[in-house]
Structures are given as C-alpha cells and as structure tokens.
Image (cartoon, one colour):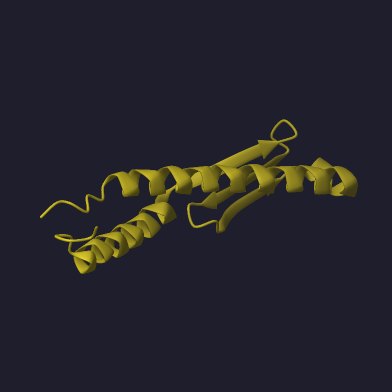
Length: 100
C-alpha cells in the first residue's frame, strides 16, 4: 500500500506546513464585538488575547459585563478555531503522497 512513497519526506512536509501555519496564525487577528460594541475582544491566530476594550458604563453592571465577556470570548475562539480548521484542510490538500 505504501510502496513507492517516501514517508519521511511526507512527514517532513507535514512538519514544515505545521510550523508555517503556526507562524501565519500569529499574524491573523480575530475580533468580536458584543453589546453594540461595549465589549471588544481581539485574539491572534494562536488564541492569545491581544486586546480588550470595555465601555466604562459596564463597570457598574457586573452581570452584563460577565455575560458580554463570555459571549465575546466564545465568539472569538470559534472564529480562530474555524480558521485553524480551514488552514488544516488546505494543508492536507497540499500533501501528495504519490509525488516524487
């Protein structure tokens, strides 16, 4: 089944693409705005929080602040995950185990 395929070469390709995807991921920025912009949360493609803006009026309403923060976090994490999945699918499409 695997005759004629260089598995070491294929694994090397996968590792190189994964490293490239991680580097490119750090450059992607995902932003979520909740409560009409009262909360704005941004993360990079490696799911690291890079910015958080909170409207001053929310500082007096803890319950609303918590709800909006949780919503923004879930939304922005989903955006990053969807991007990672799409990138992985594109990477897998670039691997041709039968190429010589």
